[in-house]
Amino acid sequence: MAYSQNPVTVTITGAGGQIGYALLFRIASGQMLGADVPVRLRLLEIPQGVKAAEGAALELQDAAFPLLHGVDVTDDATAAFDGVNIAMLVGARPRGPGMERADLLAANGGIFGPQGAAINAGAADDVRVVVVGNPANTNALIASAHAPDVPAARFTALTRLDHNRALGQLSAALDAPVGGIRNVTIWGNHSATQYPDVSHATLDGRAVPTLLAERFGGADGAAHWLSEQFIPRVAKRGAEIIEVRGSSSVASAASAAIDHVRDWVGAGSQPGDAGWTSVALPSDGSYGVPEGLISSFPVESVDGQLRIVQGLSIDEFSRARIDASVAELVSERDAVRALGLL
Ligand code: NAD
Ligand code: LMR
Image 1 (tube, rainbow, N blue to C red):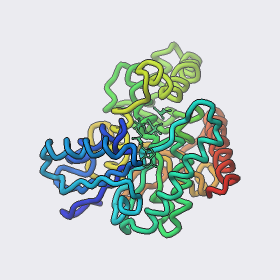
Image 2 (image 1 turned 60 degrees about the horizontal axis):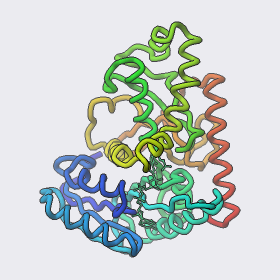
Image 3 (image 1 turned 120 degrees about the vertical axis):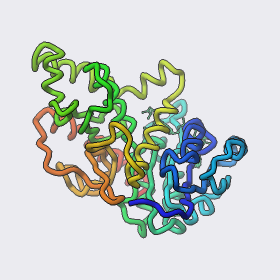
């Protein structure tokens, strides 16, 4: 699937924020949709964020990107999503002091419900949505529930950052570039319960579990490294970044969002992109994940459509971890349902 030469409309919410700033210039330069695809950017912000987004728009003009066919800044969701082809929902309500999880879900419901409705009202027929703002899976579920005319499969949430983090950790452990690693999977929620699964992964065609056993002195050593080091490191990497940097991941999150959309629309691959990737999308019941839940799976993009990779064997260890993360997603869904947000 490839876009024609007509400008593609990309709407970024929270465009005045950190991730927005890291995204805009890469999209405008052609790194997301291809070096020959013109883009039109719509920057949606809340009124307090409009100035920052306007500043970014001025800088986009100054960067003189040949592919950039216009930038609009608005605080009106209806205008922002009118005719949108790609919606990147980054702006979200962060957890504040004293806020309970239910408060956070409710606050984000107040954002993602209306944005879903605006997408439903005005988006282009081919709209694709990626939710970055946390809690990303459940925010995507809320947005989708408010967009009954848009196929649910067009609503995804970002777990590509977790996927890329897993590649980075494996690369370091096996002392090999990420480009040779294939078929890592992130299952479940973009949260600390996620399950980064390397049981089907390969490095330059060799099974990663075998290589880990060689590296860590046998199968038990590899299992210990996976459960005590790799899985928690990947699953809690967001918190590690916050602790070390003093604020949450920005450039790596933007880079992952670019990877997510680029692979979805089939805008060319880069080293390391062969094999499957991880995307949180509505379950069709595959691998025992309740239908409709937006959960991360091993995913391939075929002709611009995301397909869950089928037929993978799931061992007992993986089953328990997938089930735990899915249980968290079910509880988030039940909580937003109880709040009347679905
Ligand atoms: P930020 O605070 O720098 O920017 C967020 C921006 O969103 C702000 O400018 C704010 O004004 C805007 N905003 C808030 N509500 C909005 C609304 N209703 N409509 C439009 N804009 C709105 O935060 P950031 O560092 O850019 O992170 C954004 C989100 O991404 C956070 O929720 C963060 O937790 C999440 N995140 C997700 C991942 C992931 O892998 N899924 C990774 C990193 C960060
Ligand atoms: C991340 O994975 O880096 C973020 O989702 C962390 C966060 O809480 O913003």
